[in-house]
Length: 160
Image (tube, rainbow, N blue to C red; front, side):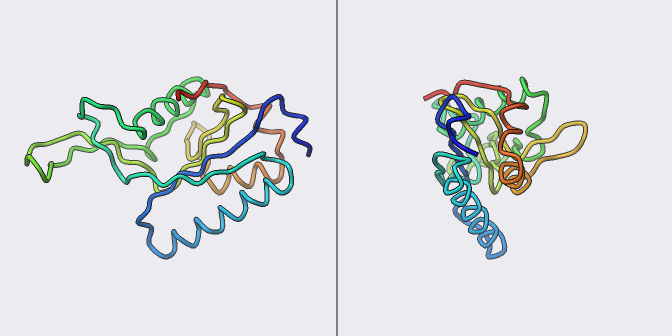
């Protein structure tokens, strides 16, 4: 399928935690290879891997990059009528600095965001009444039916 069938630059951003155990690291490598194959096949124009923290303090007065991304993902999920839970979660944790309880946003081990231009059109993992879509399933869907994201796409403009 040609990139010309899509009005904008279609790219994927693959978010991963830095501290993956060996089985998850192998899965990450396989998914990165599958995403590179989608670029070679013309399904995606570009793919980027971004390492993110396992969790970020949601109580901090300064918003983190992860929190901003999560807000974009939440907006997309609301418009797509899907849920990011339980893949993204909030937990009460004790600060190692102050000893006080803080609310932390816990990021999934792996997450895939697909964008067309500046618009977010898919986030995996997510859940709906019919089940879940994992990162692996999203990549497989792109591989087998790259047009499906276009038809099902719910668009959210990504914040810079």
